[in-house]
Length: 237
Image (cartoon, rainbow, N blue to C red):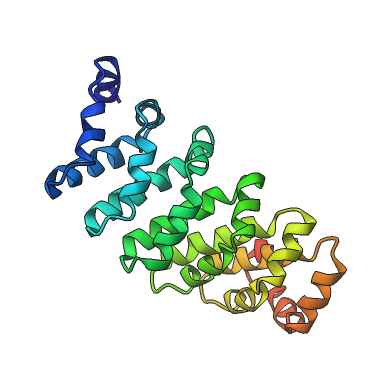
């Protein structure tokens, strides 16, 4: 943090923005690594934003080099986890950029941090609306079936947050096919994922006859009854 404060005081961050546009791969890698490291703290995040670094970070997510992709996505996920700065990522097109990367990248680290970013983006109602309108839930469906357990958990949490939206948002998500995946996750052998699935179903059923009807049509009654015998108290509730 002290080093970051010194960088801010002496205006020494700007060169890293310049390096991110370099034709030399090593320079771009170094720049992305520095921004990822600085994004861990709010002090570092503030410095990045003051120097207009968010546009560079989002651009680097689409870089052909995997190392650069990974560092840039890690940086975005760190920003998304900050209640103070999350909105700035969204305004610069962060949701759209992460969605594209989660669809096209094959790197497990990139996919894990994209799921982490979605789990944070989906907390805010305004951003949740953007995600639902762009059918980001379909990308999250894919992430929830990853072979990486952390990616699965972040994706399940993102789905849970999306399902906690307004009545109109909840009914839209059901139309987008979320119930089929939730039925799969409710039977998944991971208690954290099962918790998210159970809470999602409970949220979707609130105040909506349409959703309750769809939940019954998809055969949730028997699985939900069986969850009442689980040793986990949260899932029982």
